[in-house]
Length: 408
Image (cartoon, rainbow, N blue to C red; front, side, top):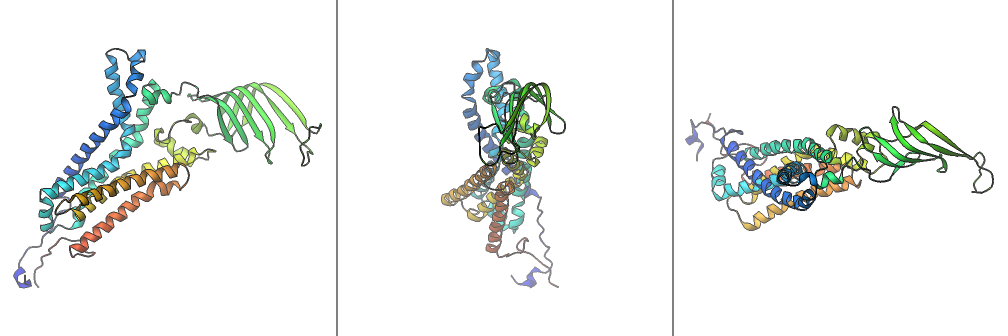
């Protein structure tokens, strides 16, 4: 069409938050909820089926109350089972919506209207942000609250396993200057029973042993030992050889109460045995910054970074699903293209879980474990968008096509 024929034509301005965005956003959210419902139906069934025998064998839940408590347990288990699946469910919901729009020829109509690929991705970004925010609240707030209700009521398999009212037996805990063996009363208040503290000197030799029936934390990193005794060996000029001769001067002293320094994080100790995802966010932030003589420190740091990166991960999965769908089946849904897109989403989900596991065990830094895959997904989505732009002849220009202009 000659430029002269366009004299007086009015420019076309397409709203990024207009009707198309609202329709697509509604479809994304609706299909994502349907995927989540299907996944949670399977997960809840697998999780609750072995627990029916546990509840039916408990005299507290016998009779008509059994069904009520099963339903209540199912609701309490949802915040624990749901969060890991939300990003992948978002990806599936977006791909499902895009496939439905392709088959109804609505995607072809949108392309022919001249709407830019960038603005076609606005619904995916909004859906990812909405679902990601909801996932953060479920994972960071509802999940710890739900598991603590189960623990307090000793309800279900997890409530029994994590019951803080019973002793888990002897615990051996590494200290900066020695070793601790004790039974933990999680409290509150926190207490240690049948305590034995082995202290080493600067060269790694045993030089003191403290035993007590009870230990309670005091301010300033001190602990009050009650009902015990301590043994101390002083080697003034022991040389380099171990000898049974009378070079060592040993002493044993009984005490009713005694205050001793012990570099032991009480918050970590009171939550020992709880997975990082079951900690409230303020506790998790404190433990992630604390110096802990345990592998748990990597788990706390990784969990915190994964929680913060969760909304970005959901946005990245939604963006990737929308971009790949518009690239490979914008005009027709071929089964090979659909399988390839679904496989890409599963590989992204697998990569997320793999990096989180490596971060929890200290193989990669927590920041990389939590943020690398979400950032790569955003980069991949940008590359897909650029490919679509080039195919539509726009290059790096993110605008609607065609662009009508008045001839000067």
